[in-house]
Image (cartoon, rainbow, N blue to C red; front, top):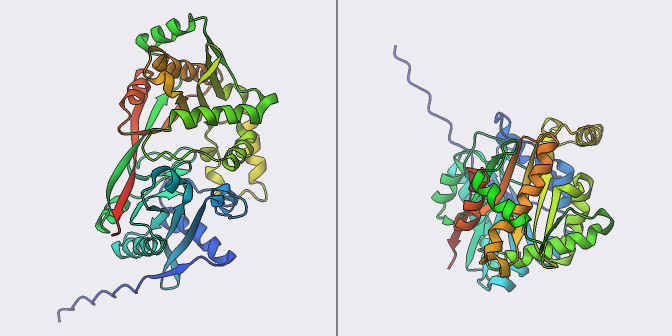
Length: 389
């Protein structure tokens, strides 16, 4: 007798629950473990850091924004998550009635993504928004963009990871590309190309130029100077939102334990602060085996690895040249100069790999400059958009 194949059990309905308690928040934070448990390139986030980032009392983002969070459930277990944000700082700069979504994760099922995204859309629409973009977790100055190319290597510090089906799932929910963000890989051990070295040498002969590291005795003052250059340099870029005073203080506090003076270079031209760059050790990868836990011994392991120089990779998250120099002959030379200064230091101290990220797909001058020093685009992060009218 021929046996008939038993009919497949239909999937249960996806339920979207708001995050309204401490237990709900823990469920929200832990969703990625269910998504990536068999992905060798995923690095578990530090749960304590995620709690602080999502805390309305600790994160100064919430001084100018409101947000909501949801977890998707099916058959009693979490299968996805999302956030929705309305940022007054964004609206003041862009005036475009745009809300945001972020923290998007989900198992491979279009219904999960559709349900989560529709929930976020309804929330921002209720607050008068006519367009939604993302992912931003939480803002453009935090982790942003959805990985759509470059799944075969781990993400760098403050950069995201995703499954290959994420992009198509978002597009099936009616979203299109707003902008791509590029991440560049660079072999720090390689010397500059002859062309780049020639530009750097020429710039170094200019008596008006002065390069210096971060002054730890004037730490907060220098951080304000760096952010001032950044805010000026990026002010005309797509999606730019300036960092607030509270965010600057928070940044200064959060990176102080892992930064050294020579990780930073500030360029002064004719006595005026003109350019800067900041590099950070990739503590994200150093913490990969902690499984998101700093207690009871995670802190000790991480600090020991930093102290013993066990991190051979880093990320350059901040690079800026004041607008008044960007269209001049000094602009590219200033950018090359600050990059060369910090990477010369890292090269001498055994660093091998760096990520320069992120760069707008439309910013060809910076792309050409990074390619000149040996950078190769190896990951693409996409900002999606959808009209809600």
